[in-house]
Image 1: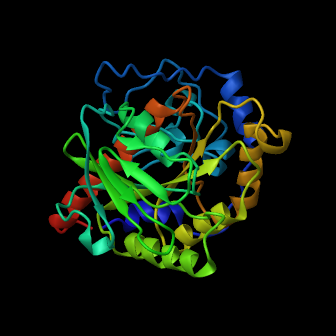
Image 2: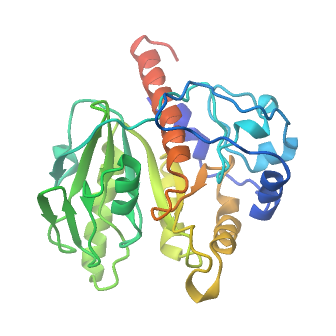
Length: 319
């Protein structure tokens, strides 16, 4: 069902120019796509800028979604703070309603209504709950905890201790699709056996969830690249699971060890650039300032609409 979309992030070598090169294009030309969330966002909406970026930049750095010819890409179609081109599948990205549905201790217990879903994954304390709260603009829909291994959803306490109970948390958006919050990985005080349990549990979800549209892999931009994030990305790529890198905490002037988020993001790209034939989508965000919220929702809308269309084609026997 999702092979055409997932194949865009297959693990084959490609070469990516530095983040500085992409940033230079962003600063030199007007990238003014800003979305008013009080109004519907029309599919394929464009800005006045129709300047075409260099072909090599399109080929090696930009994520061009289905339905867009690379020669038709213009600077005005690139979402700010990202490498993502807006295509014809982009639609109304507003979130009008969000509700916590359930927590599941096994992948087979997750909702079976066939609605598309986006899984959010990342290291413990990466800010998954904060991102969900920012996206839905409900402060307490996913309460945060500073103690790894404890997750609280709405008024329902979904507490889990590494290696004992692990939960998949589903949030229904606009009664039509899901945001899925998965347990964080890389908690410092967990035993090796507990980490293996987490790995088997989460991988089972990824490999058996047919309605999974894409994974949002959160990466902390305030610290240098972490091996565990690179390992997770490589595993997703090897298993042909579509993903978007969501860089968090990008509002900080300086991150860990005095490094800037932009430097950390560039280092991350340099480490992972040999792994992909096509550039995977990435976007910069901040739950403090709201940076990247509207752009990420727009990106999710075009992936979701393409998934719906692709699913309809499969049902009709169209390859």
